[in-house]
Length: 439
Ligand SMILES: *Cc1c(COP(=O)(O)O)cnc(C)c1O
Image (cartoon, rainbow, N blue to C red):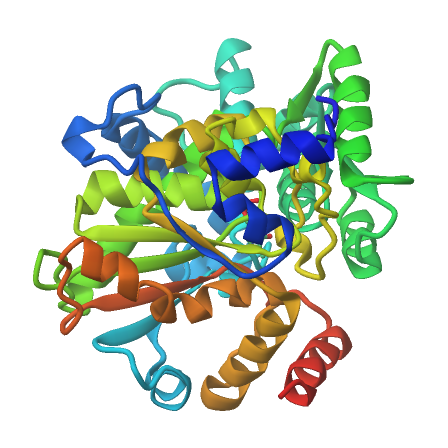
């Protein structure tokens, strides 16, 4: 889709219709409450149901024996790719002194193999594609153990097929690793500025990495064209993918169990607030959809975007969803939070988020680094900059709670930490130093 670039006159018209756009265009941090937020039993036109989430979870379970054998780091969880939920009370006591209730971190930076939230969506989409091919070709019987996916017979079958993906980093990393393990030819289309260590790691894992000059959307476009030209090619489209979304949504069933294990209830007296770093909107959208289905209306989900890449925010504020990009408003989409550097939201996810997200806030890159260093100092947990975006969530929601008569005294808050464990030591040290030096 092309960038429109509004004239000054058009921008003034937009701003008079949606006053918050002025602050957004001036790159000021904002907090926006979603006027379209809908109760679960009134939400219409949701493209998926709870049954779809449960089916997706069953698919994960079928693949668990394969995952366990392929990635020994998943053996402790019998091939389930999941992350812990940790209370971060030191962080709360030191940096969120005003806040009531408890503060938790959902540690997706520790997700096995991919080290980011993309292990949910990316892995899931590749697994469902592999399963579909295996069933359609008659190679896989109904009751068969999925350890057959480890065999040379399966690997050479998948070797006829190609998978392509455009990525600034983490998505490519997850898709590249799992696709190559299954035997697919996999090509990851990246922009020139993608991190070198990610390119190296992908190549080491057997993926092809193609680099493109210019904006990341160029890489996606080139990748999509090259992949679909091949009749045995499959393009994983971050800008419009139901499967990525479903992969993310299953996190809700797992979180429900983790909450139970910690005796955390979710009801009117114990509302749950969840803060999700947001790029194209797939991971926060899928997780929000799942949480609303599984836990109901007393879970309140907020997305966090960089001030320079507020793509889902402008899509929802204007109601234009994926028909609009930050560049249309002259916003540059330049942020050091590479997981969130997206100019246009996902079509599939944004239709759902429009009804289910409680709101969105934006924050500056400096704030990400500051929070990253705070968390390291108080909890000894190291995240990549994108993943720190949820940590200021509890400071944002007072007005929302007041207007919606939500009691905060027994609230629980979860910041979703979306990535970081694969970041090389020296890059991480740089992130940390940068945050420490900002006062
Ligand atoms: C991809 C990513 C996100 C955001 O997910 P989207 O589906 O793009 O919204 C957040 N944090 C990290 C570290 C990511 O890699």
